Length: 184
Image (cartoon, rainbow, N blue to C red; front, top):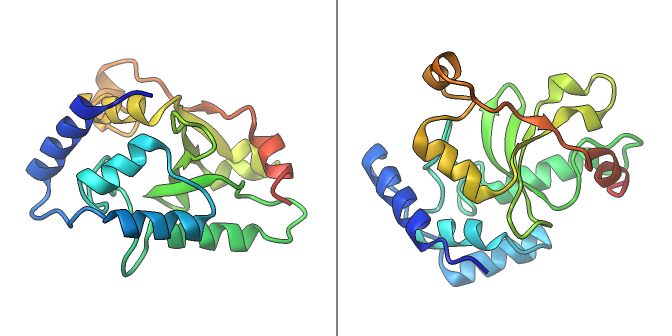
C-alpha cells in the first residue's frame, strides 16, 4: 500500500496557505464513527487527509466537505443522495460513492470507496436526462492523481488551465449502469 506522505504534506502546505484557518483534523474515533455511519471504509488516502490535514475546507473549487460536524458534511451529503435514490426504479446515486465536494448546480466530486485508489467521479445531473448512468464521469483514476492535478493547477475546473493547456476532461464512468442497478 502506498504511503502518500509527501502528497499529504504538500496538500497540507497548500491548504494552510489558502485558508485563513483550517479546522482540526478528525480523530480516529470520529473517522471510525463516520465510516460506521456510511457503512464503508474511506480509501486510505482520503482517511489520511481528514486525519492529518483538516476536517475539510481545502482542495479545489468549493473545497472538501467536512467529514463530520455541523452543516453539510460528506456523511450527510451521502445519506441525502442515497435516501433520494432509495426505492427509485432509476436510482441516481450508487452505493459506495462518497460526495466530497460540490461544484454547484447539483454537481459533485465524489470518491468511489469501493476502489482502494479512490477513483474520483464527477456527478453532473444535467447529463442524466437519458438515464442516470450518463450523469457519471471519471475525473481521475485515483484520489492521488486528482490531488496532483489540483496542486499543479491543471484541472478542467481551472479557467486558466482550460484556456491555456490541454486539460483532460472527465470521461464517462463505464461501470455506472452496473453500479446504479446494484443500488436498487
